[in-house]
Structure formats: structure tokens, C-alpha cells
Image 1 (cartoon, rainbow, N blue to C red):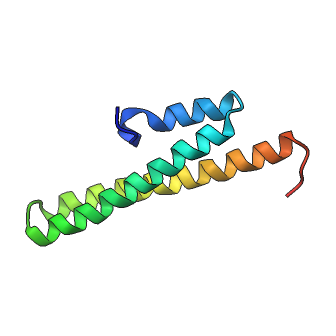
Image 2 (cartoon, helix red, strand yellow; image 1 turned 45 degrees about the vertical axis):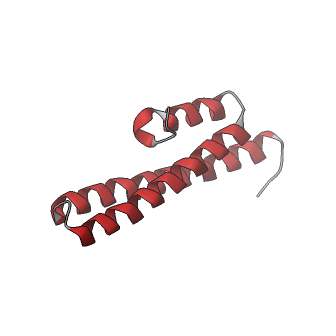
Length: 90
């Protein structure tokens, strides 16, 4: 199964964080960020080839940027919660 937001990987990463597997969660979330960035790059290449309309591309790019934003925030929260749990103040 591909590690993308649409396949449920975000929920899997969140579950890892919930059970205390923050390393696995952060690794998976970083994969999601990389996939979203790759998809955005691909979408721009397609726009130059005129395979899709500008409206479709804008929609895809906005979704993938949202995924990146949400996932980066989740990573920050996991790191913060982990540090609080082990008693380290940031």
C-alpha cells in the first residue's frame, strides 16, 4: 500500500503517536510530506504539458499544501508531547 494521505497513512501515523511510538509516527509523517511535495512538483510538470486544466492543478496543489501543513503541525505536536512525557521542557 502506498504511503500517502489518501491511503490512510496519516491515521496510521496518528495511531502510532497515540500508543507512544513517536519515532514511527514521525517517520511516516515525513514520508507523507515528501510524497506531497513530489506530487506538487509532478503537477507543475503536467501543467506545462497541458494534460490537465489550471483549475484542476490548483485544486490538487492546494490539497497537497494542506497535507504538508497539517502533517508538519502533527510532527510538532508529537515532538512536544514526547518531550513533556519524558519531562523535558522545551
